[in-house]
Length: 329
Image (cartoon, rainbow, N blue to C red):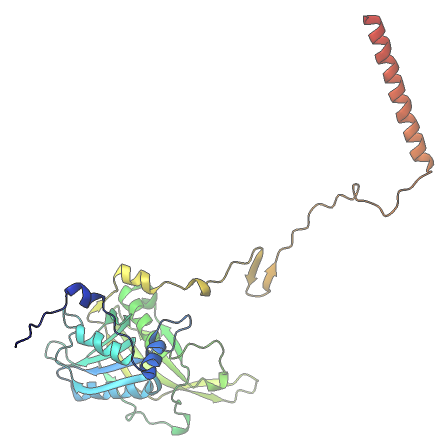
């Protein structure tokens, strides 16, 4: 006897929620759940359908700079086209799979040679995109290997040029570069551990020279050492070809701050760069005349005279009032 196979209703399929079946899966979901203080942002590095040797070196060296918090895929991805509709589905899937909120995608074509796309995601959806020429690898830089920056160290950033304040594309590129290379957000730093600096120079409205330098501290005759910059690579020129800003609704949702993290405003407290924290204290008017004394003085001549004068005045006023009443009657 054949059994009839009946498909479940569509509403039931949409409402059904898969729950983790093991403790390990539950722990992984808890790690990816929203937190008041988020973890450091991880970077996903991907190859497009076709990449050149220069682009392969760029992606490899970006991976070495962020080796402690990045994931690199070496296979070609034919379905990923970040600036085209429908070409972002696979990218969002890989972002969800690896729990990465930043991505670097390399592709090469006749129309856009050595094309590098740097972008961010929010809730594993594409947030914004910035699309990049010239490249100088770490191997081509000659320097003392003792001053090479350590993996995971916090960098300085130097943005030179008015374009980072006036041009919308460069302001956007500045935000993406800060998110890409700053690493874990910390509350305090050891100055001895600062060993690198990223120098970004705006040459024109769509071109930025990106240089990675190591910090060398030398004697200066004072307590403050003299600082020298040594180029260690990678260095490249960013040419903004295409860029896409996030939707206003998505941007508004991404910029929300949890109520627990909002600091309450302190009344009558201000901060000064020189004097530090300044507070205002308001003292109410002190009514000394009405203040209660520990004892009541008695037998003082002045008080007796005042009381007697006051009593005589009251008696005279009562007599006048009585006489006036008799006359009127």
